[in-house]
Length: 225
Image (tube, rainbow, N blue to C red; front, side, top):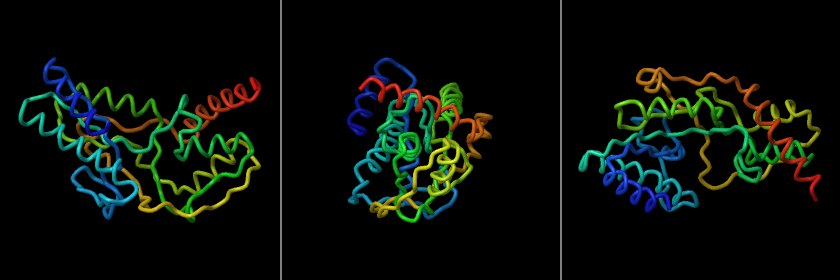
């Protein structure tokens, strides 16, 4: 869907002379050898690994988006989104923040894969939306990283969510999935220069707002059973 959907949407944008925003992700960098990741980095992706379909779909989507811009003049914008979180995420989303929040609030063990030393950078949703709007209003067509350059280990994330929720859940470790990226941190110099953008919401505030939403939905779900 990432490939075919992008191709179809680009055809529609060309026919309607519409602006086109591609929501790419930091997955295009794979397990990066360059840290932090700049837009000029081509990435380190295993095309036949268990994550390959998703990674390569995003990379293909970027390639065909730029091809439509160059060949057909479509007004495209490409954002490389790093880990984003906030209220109304799916409780069973599977990503780190919703997984840890739902586990902590339910009193279940917080599952950390590997030793937890792998890093991610988490951006609150309102900051991301502001960046998307600024990018769409710009005349820039090449990829732009949008994310929070504050880097945190997954183990530290689990510990902080446990503290912020007041949970007594234990932290358990499971094997690290194949090709799981060991580091993730955006270089946002391009976004700062071109868009005057950088994230504003502190992690503790973003987690507090997200926790309130998750707490309401999880306990509402439990009481309706």
